[in-house]
Image (cartoon, rainbow, N blue to C red):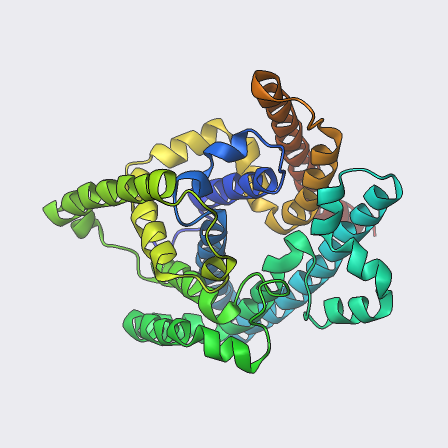
Length: 368
């Protein structure tokens, strides 16, 4: 993709798909979650989400810098950090309130434990302080704290990547290699409290930045090397799928995801190459045009992420888990479609409301 292009419909489409997948993946009764990325790969939607976050951040920073200067771009991402922090607190609040309601009604005990309501009810003031200072992040809110730090780093990383993508990637890789000791220094090496080590996951974010600022040339895409790489990528994807489905029959340790293990990085790269080739030939753009509602989800990402927390909790609680076999699959599918529909409606409502604000302001100015 050309750095000079405006907002990418392909990126918004991918972000919309990932946000929907995140909701489904956090519904234990979901049927569709069994065919999502984590089911046949060592990576999952988290890598895609963070990578696209870096890509979109680089696009936004360069757009503001070109239009209004570097100072305005830096201030934009300081404000973005504050926006993400507020979204984090709201997500944590929704999660805890949902857990409290479920506990009060004696519903969905596993989800009550996932929300972190029980420790919060035992020590509300201490737990509230821990949440506020990012020492503890309830359930789905755990990805947002590292996004806050990344927003603050964008004004430093993007200019570095513009000067030298090799230097940016080398620095990012060095920090990734030292991620565990760096996390230990700040006492964020406990999976129960920090599901994502920000020193490790910044590699995905920086990869997204570099791919936006220094995309693979059309000359390379058209050459034999790219076609060979595609064949290798397909073989690697199938090999990783075979390992996941046949060899690794037990859940992997959480520290591998928390610290972004090298096999997850490699698996993501070979998978990402394939849709990148589809983007080049216009297939993703055509698909996005046929599914504009998914694109809208991607364009209202933060709102859909926060709202998706409630959607996943409510739909999973309302979906009966007493059925097994074919009926269980049908009930899971019903819950999946309700969750997807709720997220699509939320995105449409928010996008429509935001679209009315400029018109209302312009109308008020004319009346004045």
